Image (tube, rainbow over all chains, first blue to last red; front, side, top):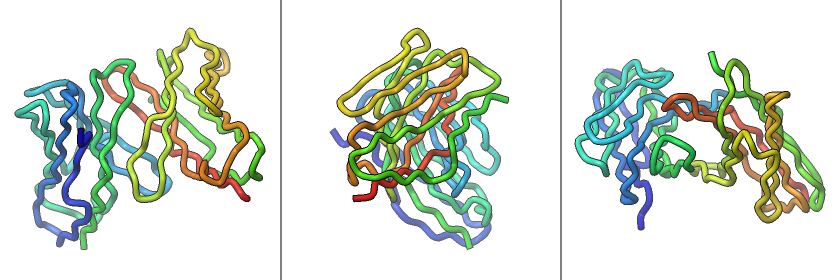
Length: 113
Length: 110
């Protein structure tokens, strides 16, 4: 079991570029989510999904898009990167969205210059 | 809006002592709270979950309490070791969103 796999681990983008952060889990979890972590701010929820074909916005969704075409994959898209999106991004999954632990990937450190 | 607050100040304790970390929540009543550990450059790792009808939960040297009157959870590490040094996060779910506190950085000094 690989758990939750995120790629890439590091990325530098120029302002205005687009990119997709990949997240895959092999635990057949229904619930997947994306967080960003900034110093002093903790983990903030960007988008989440309760199953294939269903996504919803979290606390800080602006500038990010997601889709969930399969149970395993939950990519996060930055359409036009901005310096304010410089952060560490974590993908997480859990069996359901109730009463179960979340498993996190190792994170993607993104720098937008 | 719902808030989860942890003491943002770093906590330094001597090896062998008990570390106590605090998590306070406001504006809602979560059915359960979770605690995670995060090491530098890594994703959070789940430690314990405590439900609102449980006053206390233990796992090895870890103990978590949940006081719904005070709207507070305490996380204890007994007989602390330098390997316990990390950032500890509490989290609660409301609707379909898992919300985290900003974490408390614990350093156990040898």
